[in-house]
Image (tube, rainbow, N blue to C red; front, side, top):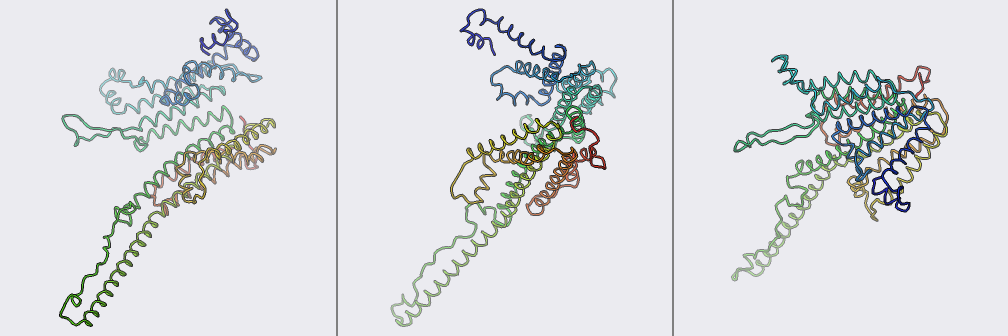
Length: 531
């Protein structure tokens, strides 16, 4: 609340209640009262808040200010520093609300500080080492010049390893996990853009160049570093919040990545279908509404020589005219039959060209719907593994059903309606509609709500939910591989290299192996899934 808002709000009380000093006195009183309920020292709350603020600043810098952009619709015109301070204070307070909170350690503070410095230094250019290389000699200068980015990220990895090794408490694990994910994003985005030059088009000494943005520009060593950082962050999340939180987070990431692939594959299918229809079995202008066959000119009756000959025999002239009219009629019928045949061939060719596009669209729709269902089942299994408390389970079940019913009603109210709409037009409207992406999130929440009736209400062994999560991941991976095979075999997509299938299957089923390692041969978890 700003000073002007406070003054206008407390104007009825007059001075000194509307003054700035009174405002901060009330803030201090409320803060002190809240801290008095905690079983810890107030300085520990301040330390936790400072660590959160450092993590938020570093992550926002590594994510190219995306955190500030995401929170802008929520905070409006509020200052970013004010929102950061408030969020940090809330985090510091919540960390110490448990009955036996752990005091922050020096190693934990240094852990977050070192990883944050690694991220800030990578973005600010602190690790170029050009000055040090100049003192060492020409060989070091050549190494830094040729392998500059590799040296920078090698330094980041060394600092990250030191910082993570000093992580001790759950809040520190969580903050370091956020920093590692941000570092992975920055590492990949650092090689996302590449300058493409066109010297043959340059004139007057001005070199023409463009920025080419594509993940194909990212070097392999960047992908290796990003994968290592993501795996390490997953371990830290497990140490911070348990296997249940890791499972639920994996489901959300699975859903988000699936939607991104859904949009990309849909765009590729649209381009592929248009290219096939315009340049496949048809002429280059086929399907554009322009004629491709020579136009059939209407038959004209030419006067017969017999009828125009005034000296000829009238009977012979009449017979010749009848023959000529029959010939003209026959030619006209033949021309009409040829035109209809050409139209039928063109329609058949267009239908054949459009078949791969229809197959690819239906395949992508079905794959995304099944992915949403499996991800929802996986998420509710993770929520079930978080706690055995009955009150928590009933609360989560209620919230899921409220979200599902409310989302269904809201989507039904805002979805455009048209009476008598054919299924193919509805499918096209669904694919390119404004709200069609929310349908998949509604399926995701609906799967959580329906499966949650059994998962969150029943009291069974944690191994049952681990096995259900394993089955969901396995079925989701098989669905992805099957969809890829259909798109390549019948959807007109080019075949992919073998390593892409291996990477897709390994990344999508990675959590499945972690879950299987948590279950012993007798079918019970080795440890509690909540920690």
